[in-house]
Amino acid sequence: MDKTLIVTNDFPPRPGGIQAFLHSMALRLDPERVVVYASTWKDGTEVASFDRQQPFPVVRDPSSMLLPTPRVTRRATELLREHGCTSVWFGAAAPLGLMAPALRAAGAGRLVATTHGHEAGWARLPVARRLLRRIGEGTDTLTYLGEYTRSRIAEALTPQAAARMVQLTPGVDEKTFHPGSGGEEVRARLGLTDRPVVVCVSRLVRRKGQDTLIEAMPRVLAAVPDAVLLVVGGGPYRARLEKLAAASGVADSVRFTGVVPWEQLPAHYGAGDVFAMPCRTRRGGLDVEGLGIVYLEASATGLPVVAGDSGGAPDAVLEDETGWVVRGGSPREAADRIVPLLQDPGLRARTGERGRAWVEERWRWDLLAERLKALL
Image (tube, rainbow, N blue to C red):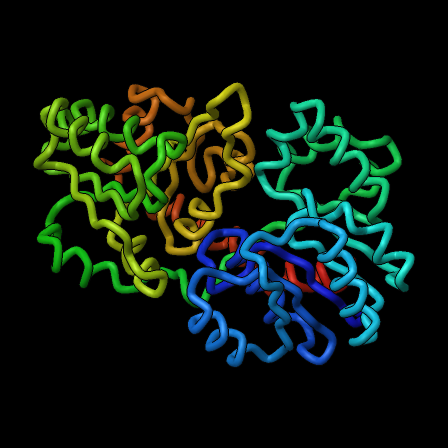
C-alpha cells in the first residue's frame, strides 16, 4: 500500500456510522503509512484527546465542515507533499472528491473515493449528478456499498468511471458482536427474562420503521401474548413513537431504552430473540437506506433478521437463510415474518447460525481492510 492521505469530514470523535467506518478501516492499515486530514468538532478538548490516542497522525482543519474550498485544497496538497503520500482516500466521495485533480497534480498516483447511501439519492438531482460525474472522472475508483447504491450512482457517471467502481462496505467485528454478548443481563435488568423479545437497534427516525413495528405489535401479541418490542436508541422520533404505542394499545409491550453507549450495544442485540427494522424509502428516493449494518451486527450476534426493502438494506440479508425482507411500512408483512420466528426456536437457531457464519465468511473487518489496501 502506498502512503495514504485520508481526507474526510467524517471522523471520530464526531459520532456517526461513516465516522466509525473510516476509523475502523484506518486502524487496520499500516499506521506508518497513514495520515488523516479531517474537520474539527465542537468539543476541541475531546478531539485533541482522541487524536493523541491514534497510532497515526491526525491533522485537524479549523473548520467544522470540510469542503473542497481553495483553502482546504491547498492544505490537502501541502499535507500530501509534507508526508510523502502517493495515494489519497476520500472518506466521502461527494463533495471532497472534487479535489482529486489538484491532488493528482501535486503527486498523488492513486485516488480512491468512497460513496455511502446518500450519494444514491443525490444521483437523482441534476446538479449533484454533474458533481458525481466530475468526481468519477477525477478519481481512479469510486467504491459502493451494494448493488442498489452501485446502480444508482453509476447512472450519473461516465461508462468508464462506472466500470471502475469497486464494492467496499463497512465490516462487523465478529469478536464484539457474538452470541453470548451479555443479553441475559440486559433482559434481567429490564424485567424481560421470560418474555420473547423483538429488538430494534437504530436511531429513532421515520425511515427506520420503528413505527411499523409498533403497528405490527397487535398482530404479534395476538399470536404471542407475552412478546415485547425493545426499541434501542435515541432520536427525534421517540415522542411520536411513544404516542403511537399508547394509541395502538401496546404501550405495555414496547420498551424504549433511549441512547445506549456503543460498548453496550452488543448486549442489547443479544437481549433479543429476533431483530427487526423494516426501513422504508422516503422523499422520492432521497432518504434511503445505504446498507444497514445493524442487520449484519444482529446476524453476528446469532439473531434472525427482518429487514425493510429500502435501498441497499436487502444486500445485508440472505433471503430465507439469514432472515427476510418485507415491504417497508407494512405492519402486516412485518408481523407475518416475526410471529413464526418467535414461535419456532429451531427456525430462530438455524437462521441465526447461518447469519453468524455469513458474517464470518463475508463481512469481517480484516477481509474488507485487505480490499481497501489493494485499492490504495
